Structure formats: C-alpha cells, structure tokens
Length: 164
Image 1 (tube, rainbow, N blue to C red):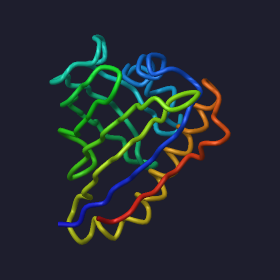
Image 2 (tube, helix red, strand yellow; image 1 turned 45 degrees about the horizontal axis):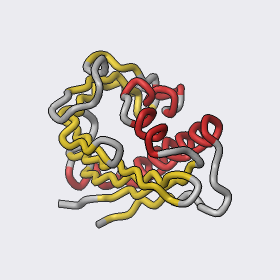
Image 3 (cartoon, rainbow, N blue to C red; image 1 turned 90 degrees about the horizontal axis):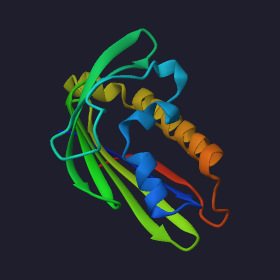
Image 4 (cartoon, rainbow, N blue to C red; image 1 turned 60 degrees about the horizontal axis):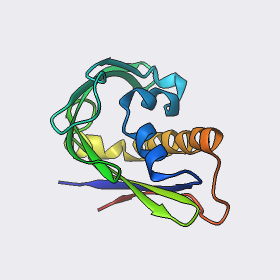
C-alpha cells in the first residue's frame, strides 16, 4: 500500500479566533477553492463543526470528472484543530488534519493530508497529475487567504507532497 502526504503551512497576521471562525466553517471552503473545480456543498454545513458531522460536496477534481465527495469531521478541538476524513469520493484514503497555532503577530495554519490513490498500481501512475492538481489547489488557497487576511513577511509558506 502506497501512501502520500501533503504538508502545507501558512502564516497569517490574524488571531486564532479569527482563523478558527473562518477555517472551521465549511461554507468558507468554496471561497478558497478554484472556481474551475465547481465546488458546491450539498448538505451538512448548516451547523457549527462537531465530531461526527457529515458534509457532502460536489466537486470537479479534474476536467470532465465531476464527483460527489462525502467527508466526516472526526475530531475537533475548538480553536486548535479538526480532522476530516473522506467517506466516499475520489481517493482510496483522504485523512486531512487542520491545525491552528498562535505565533508572534499571528497564526500558523498547518495542513497534513494523508492520501492513498485508488486503482492500485494504475492509480499510482496518476501520482504526478494528482500532485500537480493538489499543489495548484493549495497555491490558490494561499493566494485567497493572503487577499483576505494579509501575510506575515517573515514566515514563508511551505508546501510539500511526498510519498511516505
């Protein structure tokens, strides 16, 4: 079984409360997802985040490949972190940890996503395409968050997708 891990971090000049309010509200995900992905929440985002919450989306991860994606919020520690796990969707495994940590003059947001591609060996052949797409999505997100909240000049954004 081949796993991949994406690790992204971004510093923002905002408080933990502001970061948490934005990032823990699933309705804000559309604002930081590229338009061409056709992201639309179908159900489950009408309440504050809680463990066991099921959220259903429609998304186009690749042109011509619309899909439904169902995630469950499995862990929440208010103001600090939450975890979403794919229940149905395009990956064999999607386990996404979101952390928020106070740093001087702002917060550090950190995402760690463990991924297993579908279709065994054939799926692994698609890794370069998946890596490129996820990198684009996180670069877009970085840009949108900077537009909304600004940035901390002395804290570079980091993005790394690797095999583990």
